[in-house]
Image (tube, rainbow, N blue to C red; front, side, top):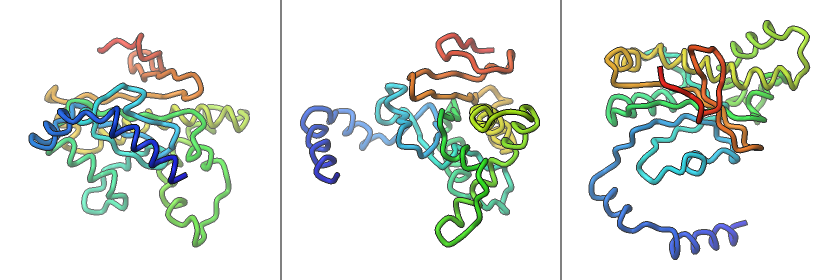
Amino acid sequence: MLDKLKAGYSEFIDNNFNRDLAEYLADNGQFPQTMFITCSDSRVVPNQITNAKPGELFITRNIGNFVPPYLGENSRFLATASALEYSVNSLEVKNIIVCGHSSCGAIGSLFKDLKPNENNIHIVKWLELGKNAKEKALKALPNGTIKELRDYTEKISVKMQLDNLMTYPYVKKRIEEGKLKIYGWFYNFRSGEIFCYDKKQDKFVPLLEFEEE
């Protein structure tokens, strides 16, 4: 595998490395317009699906693309919260996208009876952030199959992360000032399609058909 990565690096440095852009970013710093919160899943590649160049996306990845609710100094999940704090207050991004995806392992794990042990103790703790989405799915689809529940939860979870974003005072403030917008995306990596949550219709619509409020 290392040989494959080395070959890939060689291809990148010889044919794909944009030296002028790299030098500009090195000299001037980063000024991304969008924070992109998505899953750690290796099948989701933000720059690829958006065709974004280096410096355009401030990417934060975690298992399940969860946004912990704001708890101030009492927060237990600091990595994502600190990235959010930095992107909004320091980089002053204009957009935040929470992007979920199909066949999400984190969402699937919510429907398994995981018991904490020395190999998964942090995973089990982290997955607590998805329990509310699971409960909503069970309530909405009381007779649903596991697949139906998973599919529903993958999308309802994205909506709930948008709600969690609004618990951060500085996010809410900048939205109210018209300086920030938040979006919920769902990426089907089998088809390559991206859907965006439309608040007016309360459903996910194809991204290219999504219209701003």
